[in-house]
Length: 149
Image (cartoon, rainbow, N blue to C red; front, side, top):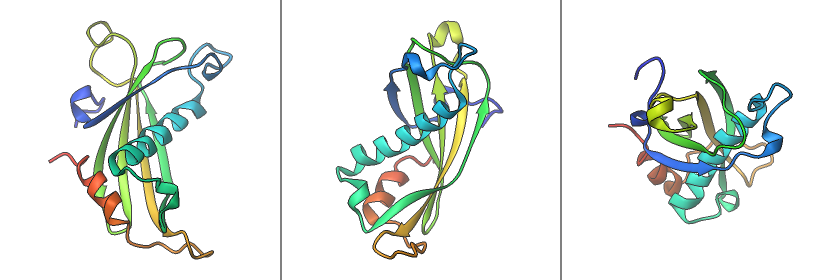
């Protein structure tokens, strides 16, 4: 992987619409919105790939870590393409990377405008203490398809 990821670094794609309220006072995407996009990219993929309501499973993924590297500004009104890839699948955790792309790939280039790191740890949703637990098989099968081989 290069220092600045490109479209070829990702496996699954989703296009999201930007909204007027996503921009901050400086006229670019608010930092908090990047994290909303990461969360949406991961969880929308899981819903679609598993065909199940992931919130209703006895084991659910909670966010244990997030981060973002910013390379160039994003903002309203153009849509954003989110690229998703998995770096690691553990017994109870998954490490995702999410690339954000906006604009014409020829004019803007194939490099990401930002890249997020997003770690899910699966916990027992039926136990109030929510201890870490092995991830459900349906989730494991979906995230393993995102591994770069």
